[in-house]
Image (cartoon, one colour):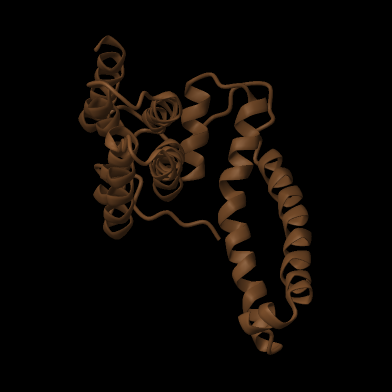
Length: 239
C-alpha cells in the first residue's frame, strides 16, 4: 500500500527533522520571496534544493522537468519587463509567480513522501516534542494519499472492465463523473476512519512516552544541507 523510493539508510535520505526544516524554509521563501534585486539569485538556489534532492534519490526525470520549469518561470518573474506591452508582461509575470511560489514546496513534499517511512517520520516528530494532536493527523495523512491513489487506480480498472473509458467523459460527462467520483468519495471516508483507528491501535495516542526500535541521528550530509539552507536563508535577508 505504501512504498518509498529509497531505503531509510540511503545517504541522501535526510533526517526527518532536516526535511521538516527544509520544507518550512523553502515554503516561506517561495511564498514571500522578492522578485527583484540581488536576493533573487539566493532565492533561486533555495527553490532548487527540492530539485537536487529529487535527483539524488533517483527521480532524475522529475528533477530535470521541474528544475527547468522553476528556472524558466523564475527568470520570467524576475527579469521579464516589457514597457511597451504591459498586458504581455502581466501574462508572463502572474503565471510565473504562481509556479515559483507553489511548485517548489510541492516538489519538496514529493521528496518527503517518496523518501520517508511513516515510522521514521513519527519518530522524528516525537524527538521534536511535537504533540500528538499534530503527530496523529500527519501520520494518517502520510498514509492517506498513497492509499487514495491506489484506490483511484482500482476504480479506473473497474470502469474499464465495464467498458467505461475516457471517451464516455466527452459524451456523458455527468455520468462519467458520478461513476468516478462517488466510489472514490466513499473510499476516502472509509480509508480515513480505518487509518485513524490503525494509528490509535498502534499507540500513537498514548499519554506517556512510547518505546521505538527506530533510531535517527544527524549525518554529515544532513548537517551540510541544514547549514547551507540556514546560511542562504540568513543571506537572503541580509542582502
